[in-house]
Length: 91
Ligand SMILES: [Zn+2]
Image (cartoon, rainbow, N blue to C red; front, side, top):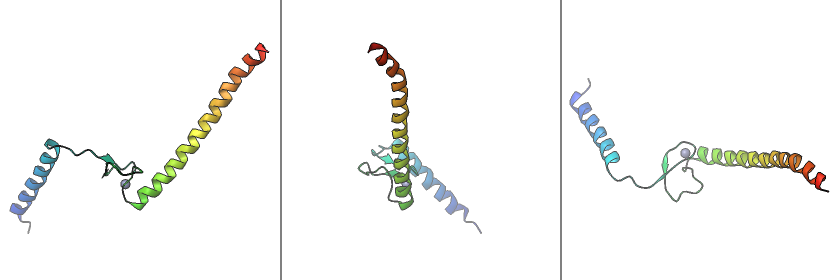
């Protein structure tokens, strides 16, 4: 059988915790960029200690770097196709 008194107590404790955590001072913290769990402010890279998150972060950073390189390449092509004819005209 379910002990209703205990359940009620548990609910009260949970709501109390939520209330105190929202009304109380919130410690400055960061969130894991993968699972968004709160982590230490000093955590670097910005992931929790979960190995899955660490791996995921490394992979994402690699992808990000590659994307940036491609963006620079396209920007370079775009700039060259725009500036190239102008420079040639000036010669
Ligand atoms: Zn995480």
